[in-house]
Image 1 (cartoon, rainbow, N blue to C red):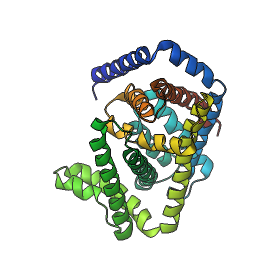
Image 2 (cartoon, helix red, strand yellow):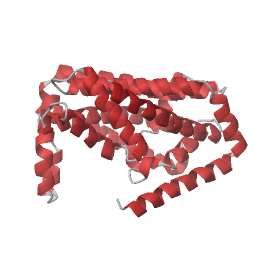
Image 3 (cartoon, rainbow, N blue to C red):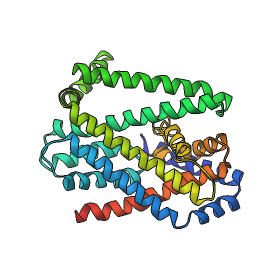
Length: 309
């Protein structure tokens, strides 16, 4: 993406946040952020634990490395993702490159990263489908969001079926599709990585189940962030409500992939979602801002920890 476009999107995201803060009330947002207080440390600790858990999932997806080696790679990737506003588009390839520096072949390194990210996406899809189905059943989504929500649920179901088919047959789908649209050079580069990824899924069912279980545990830690924050703000919310919100925001990274760091997009979705669930929109905006702050805190810690390990 051209630098001018990235700068324009970042500026637009900042403008959206400013508008949202003005709409819900500067005083309200400031008061809520103040009330979060010490809970920010808890939320940051939960997020760091989430990163450590995902490092365990990556560790189980590759061979021949210690957990400490993989954790260092994961922490470095997290710092890259948070500090460059590039999301997984730079962080995931960077992890693969860093794993090759630990002695893995290119195919094994990038294949392991692909396995971990694919399973993370799978568990995110399950959470999104469950959460949006609950919101649709409750009838709390605005009319304009109901059809997109149904579409997301259907897409998540299709993704799960595709994952299951690849795991059962050992036949990859990505390289053939890329080759089919005429991108033969890209298919040649993708094929060895996909072979490693699909081979793991097909020949290592026990390890695959372990990775899925680890990723689900990591998802629960993200939901716990929401639970802790909303309770710190003085609102009575259940663990199920926190899971619903966490599942419902999973689509943001995909839907707004072109927005650096989803700046402005995340804040808008959180504000709308919390309002739909009966809480003030200011709470949703505060939740989004808290997650931005904790991400920066953890990125700074990750830089130090990665060099120390």
